[in-house]
Image (cartoon, rainbow, N blue to C red; front, side, top):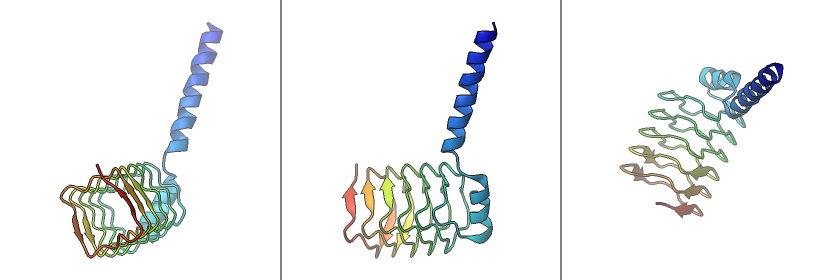
Length: 146
């Protein structure tokens, strides 16, 4: 009985630690929302749906799996950020810098990409259905769409 309890406790603690490793740092999410700056932050799986992040500094941030649906990222600096698996449906990325960012399996459905800078980005397997792309810079972008 005691061995079963210890094993169950060990499994529970391991799962909790694994979940916390994968989740966004709440203090960094709050920092971003309050100040608009969070370079190199860990925002993995962060819920930023509908956030107003105009001009935000997110250089080299980890936004893997982040929910940025309907977020306003106009003029934001996401240079070198990792957005693998992020959801950017209906987001505004007008004049945003995504240069040298990782955009693997990102959902850009209905996203506005007016004059976005994607120079040197890795854009693989991403969904650009109904995205509005005008004047964007794709120079040296690694592009492989489904």
